[in-house]
Amino acid sequence: MPTQKLKRSYRKTRYILYKETLIDFKEHFWSFIGSFVGIGILAYIQSIHFSGNDAVYLIGSFGASSVLVYGIIQSPFSQPRNLVGGHLVSAFIGVTVHKLAPDIIWIAAPLAVSLAIILMQITKTLHPPGGATALIAIIGSDKIKALGYEYVFSPVLVGVLILLLTALVFNNMTSSRSYPSHSSYHKRYHKIRKRLVGK
Image (cartoon, rainbow, N blue to C red; front, side, top):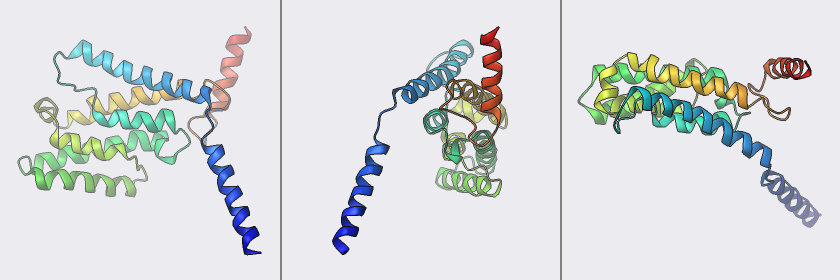
């Protein structure tokens, strides 16, 4: 009897691992296109407005958000509320902590990230790259620090909205992908698309 349970558990585990490692080329294709276009638009805006190596619009947390928003679109962390809210809350906390303790990095950095996590939990907007957004407000370049609360609106809000709009388009291109995961947006999008193609 225990041997049969063990064999059954082994078969289930093998099946789950097999299903999880299947390669879906369509999924990979749309993940690539979405992230390429989203980050590409941000890089283009960066190249138009700023010169040199100091990246203002291309903050590191946007790369991590792209992994969630284009690669794991069903995750609760990648939904629009979490994407936008998590970054905005974290940016606000990061700038506030930097203004309160600008020269004490060993207190400011952990305080900004920790407060950002707590506030994201309270507002139900937990988005893991938000911690990096708060940290960038503390350890970023002088250009980013000089922005003050403007950092919340540009680059954070502008960048997040670009990523979100790109995700709404590319994550709904096929009927197998739907973003946001628990909304009727996907159905409306495909109805409008069928009307446009049908005419």
